[in-house]
Image 1 (tube, rainbow, N blue to C red):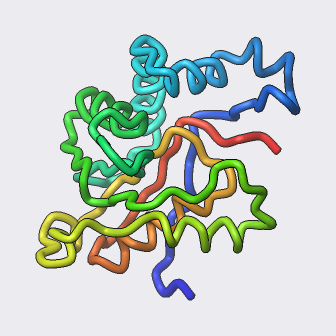
Image 2: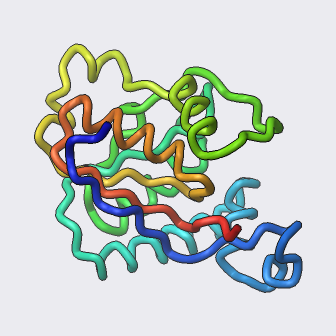
Amino acid sequence: MSIISKPTPEVCGPYYPKKRYPSKHATDQLSQDIIHNKRGDAYASERIAERMANDLQALAWDFGLIIPVPNHKSDQSDAKAQSLVRKVSGILSIPYQNDVLVRFAKSDPYRKYHGVTERREAAEKDYRINNYILKNNNLIKDRNVLLIDDIITSGATIAVCRDLLYKNGAKIVYIFCAAETMK
């Protein structure tokens, strides 16, 4: 039910899950950096941010604000996507805003979702736009924004967050993730 043409998500490269690709998982630098970033390794985060910034510069997208997908219900300042956004923002000298999107619930991470539709329904229950944007959306209204996440698997979460930004006034929402899970 989308009305606006939406840019296709871009990624730095593949993420190889350990269960399906054990040897690739063990040897692929980006896959290892994703795991180490999730564990809070600052060096891995720096490497990912530098790679993301380089790839974004090559894409030459026109955006003036960077927004992360919120990872955690609480203490979003330490979430991994927010950390990447802070570093990418510094490298590109483009401002970021951590609190435009809010994760207010967390669907069961161990539940097996049957398809993208069911995963999207779960994501729609988990994410919302922050109340201050609902009251006064001058921060994103008519702006080109970059939505960043560390990893894309089904695409449901990033699509829900993108749609929230569009529904609240964003002109163009570019999507960039460090990695995409190989199926």
